[in-house]
Every structure is written in C-alpha cells, then in structure tokens.
Image (cartoon, rainbow, N blue to C red; front, side, top):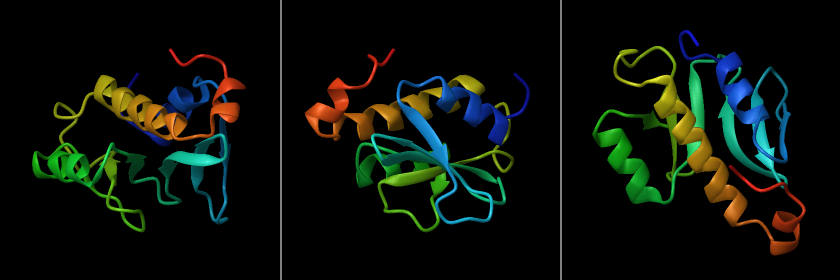
Length: 123
C-alpha cells in the first residue's frame, strides 16, 4: 500500500472482528469502535489517526521518541499517528497496523466478558 491515509486505516480496521465505523460528531470523522468503545479515530481533516495506548506512560514514550504526537481532544493515554508530518521512512505501514491492532486489543480486553465472548477471535 502507498502512503498512510484514511483509506488505509479504514481497510485495516474493517478487518478486525466486530469493528464498526461511525461519524459520532458529524462533519466527517471516522470513529472505529468495538463493543461500542472507540479504538481508532481519523478526524474530519484526515491528518492522522488517533489510537489508544496501554497507559499515559506508553503514550508519552511514543511521543518522546517521535513515533506519534499528542492526540488532540483525547485522554492522555491516546496518541495520534500523523499521516504526513513524520517522514514516511520513519513510520511504516506495518507500524501503523501494529498501533491500530494494539489499540483494538487494549479496548477489546476492557469490554465486558459477555461482549467479548460475542466477538470473533482476534488475530
């Protein structure tokens, strides 16, 4: 796949068991949820994708080493992976996929057991 983009994020997220996309605030956001909880969001401007990390420390570490930036409007355990501001050699499509999968797993693991049981197994 070419450069990172909304289309690429949507293709990766759509393949995850139970993932659903909506535009909860209107105005062209792609908010990906599993079990009703968000795990990825591409803003209306499409400058990057916001994902959940394990905790505030993990988020800070990623920002510090230049793998992500602060996710505007989100809790501090979230980061944004920009589509354009980082050198494409720097953040690979594989790394983007890993961030999305990690975020999905973190959010999925916190869902009620009954909800988790209703989802297909994660890869």
